[in-house]
Length: 81
Image (cartoon, rainbow, N blue to C red; front, side):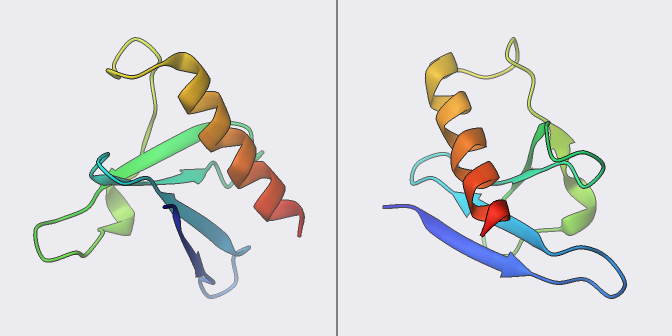
């Protein structure tokens, strides 16, 4: 089950967040060009610090590369809606 969150910040474009069970983080696309995948950890209380987003490095994650591309593609489709 994927969870989708939608957040609009003042004077900025809407941000769409995606969570994947078991990952312990929230994913979004870069606000500049929407091409780079970013993540931020989900805290123990369920909150997310929007200042902690960092780029997802393919060498830094312990998951299948295709899974990351799937997350990025899902977010890209949601942004187009």
